[in-house]
Amino acid sequence: MPFTPTALLQQGPHIAILVSATRWEVEEGRSVGLEFPELPVRALIHTGASLTIINPQIAATCKLKQTGHQKINAVGGEAGDTPSSLLRFVFQKLNYRAWTLLAW
Image (cartoon, rainbow, N blue to C red; front, side, top):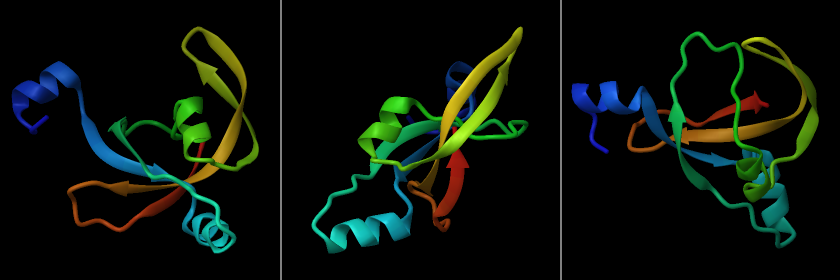
């Protein structure tokens, strides 16, 4: 969807990104014949968020390695522990470098 003020009001602040395992994991895996897909997704830009949250199906599809657990709090109380993973994301259609971050 093209960016317009109307689209921003209707859809919220989204951006197209590619999600994958970290560059190191992809290179190591491919050296022994494993495949690590890059998954195109729409991400919500939330400038006040203290962490990044992804759908567990995205983590499974991209073969993200679980690195631990994180306690997540939600409106109305604690939502519990959730797995955390390192991932790499790339802004599509923009000339920005890739980022590696911890996501829950």
